[in-house]
Image (cartoon, rainbow, N blue to C red):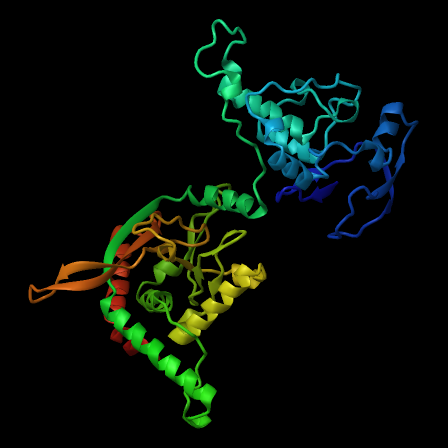
Length: 424
């Protein structure tokens, strides 16, 4: 009858009554208020006492903190009072099942289906024995807990006692975690081909330091007004360049030679008569993984092929600022064609990145580090290196193509001058 979005997923709600709809209180796509009527139904026949109980005011039927209308309060009590929700401890005595014990909110029924549980097996603690979300979680925890298989006879019990149990808490995923759970589950159905290489960043480090020095001088001259405005280069103001803008630009340049890595696979397993196809995308909308207090987000920089390195750096700065303030738009988060994950900014040398379902390749960049190495003359020198780890959709990208793409990016990074010769 209507579509509801509880806990970041859609579900259908059917009417409990047979009759004719006389009035709609909301238009299509409107947001309905909790506890307010959705429509007026002319019921055919007399109403039974059971049906009358179902349409009593919401305030009279409000459940405990585990009710679907109070998910935040349930999580808050679970965190504040972990001892009351300890897995493996005996549950408190529950109310006897009432006439509404088999009734539950759509969110609870969806949870029952997800956990493969029957509502008849659970004793509800809500009004008249209704089953609440908290009841479902507690029952599932008891079912899955190893301690549930241990006999209650203290003589035969072995190992730690029930009072020594770890006491894990069961909490719901955040909206971002829920979305990541669904996205990564779909992504891991893709066969991944992994390719990694060590990149010499020494020359790029020299170029980066010099550009930062020039940029600092230009900004200082502009601030002091010691140089005429006409003599100052009109470029985006970036306080400090990192490796990432160069890497993103190098990936875009390499995609011109290997457009397959910028495609999208169009395939629906439910349509057997439609063969898989590739959607060739001309613009390079390169996604960048950003760590935020809410979780990992992957906005993208649009049309990187038409941007300079300084413009890319400015876009990165903007996306990072919006991500930290939770103000990224739908446009920022959609339309990506390939992703770069700079996990090395946090730590780690190697990474096995997971492909986004709408893309066929992703690059993971490891931490830059200084190592001793021999140059072409056999002399020992200090070298800055970083590891690039690629993942490609092996259904459409063969190993040789991925290796050639990785090699092309390596050459552009190790010889930054090649990036300048590739600019239009």
